[in-house]
Image 1: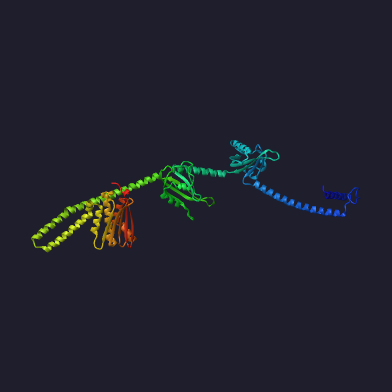
Image 2: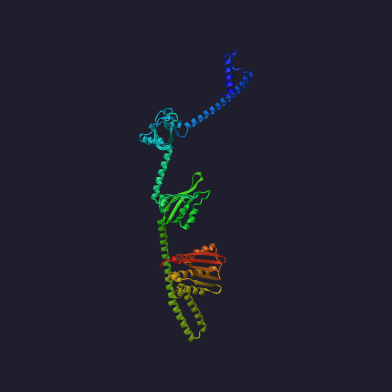
Length: 538
């Protein structure tokens, strides 16, 4: 041991003796210690005293902090949102917080040395014992949802979680248990399940599926029925939007994507029909409806229903087709009746009136040769020529014999030459295969061109009209163009509602054709397209 330390201890012992036996002589063998040594020792003792006092203050502060933390932890423990319990290995309660006592409707002190089993109904005890067995045999946290009944008139659903820990002193097994009241959440969950079940039954009865789509994450969910619509095997759809879009026909894909674009500041809704090709190459028509939903963390997604309306659409299209077919039949019968009536009138004019007029003219010419009435007979001949010409014109308008005798192209060219006059010229350029059109359809086209020329002569104030007919990629193209004054919106409405263009539109409808207008101060152009494949059958 250090000599200075021994000497210091001897000095301290000597000082104690002197204090006890004041003014006693030192015993033989005592160390000879000087007053200087005593003074140094006293200074050191004062330093030690100050250090002890400082340490004592620090200990007081630490004790106060420890007491504050202990009180805080005790407050947390007693007023935590869940009940805390410490059980021994057979389930007796050794510790519990105030929340746990409140859940069980028992004074906190009355819980100690009472088994937690006593707060369960008899038919739930096996489940709780199995839970404790799992807790004791596993190092992981275990949980169970179970019904507790502390009192006859009071019961609640609890979520119990627990771990097992061995006491460091006694090495006995203890259960650290938390108990939370989940009655309200169970009620809400059951209500949600009931609502979901009713919705599922309703959707199932109406052949309707559900979907959700998150464009930001590029993910989509289809329920079981929706998967069956797309003929996807369970679990085969990976939820990627791009794979869902691959089912949609290309002509509808862009429209579907645009429908799901989110517009800030308004509630976005989706309602659209589109065609798909299913996993098994079946063509279907789909109806989808949904709304934008604002979820947690400002997450926006769409949710809605989906239906297979293929049969409904097919029936609707068939109904429209039948309606159009009926309308065509009515129009066709009407036009055929008109043409038949025109043919009868034309035949009457040609075979009866014209023949009589020719007979009158011949007789008058015979009289003229035997009598000197040259001036008077010249006037009568001129009038008869005019009547014959106008009758022939009327007969031609009623039934164009050139169309029947020489064909469609010759008929159009003859009509253009016949109606061309000084100041108004009609140019024709006919280059198409009219053998694909039967006589009735050729007559419809002839009447359309005839009406277009009449309208141009009446309204356009044009000096030139061009008629072009040609084939292009399976379409029969008819272009009628003039250099007239054109027409404005008001004039266009009156023309479209007039009997002339209405007759043109009806005949185009019978031919399954399409008509477009372009008009300006430089003239008017009318385009009529008829697809050979779309021509109605005889």
